[in-house]
Image (cartoon, rainbow, N blue to C red):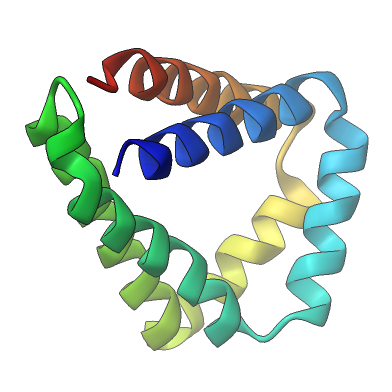
Length: 123
């Protein structure tokens, strides 16, 4: 179960670093993914990651926090899959077209902090 936490934390750190250092490339990649991949497939990513976090939480030093993040990811995956009132279309439009570079860097900082914390909490 440790390897699940290691893999997720390293992916978060890589994504956060990319969002900070290569903001334009990250925006272009997100645009290509969101336009070419079905929303149901995209919804599977946070759903599976959340279930993996819930499953592997006992291998961490703070399992309650890992379970909380996993539970939020499962809710996010369900929300994206259901897409009530086409809310995700508006969020995706904002994320691709309107969000500033500072927003991408802010999300990158959050992912680096979460990834580093999760990496340090593996028992």
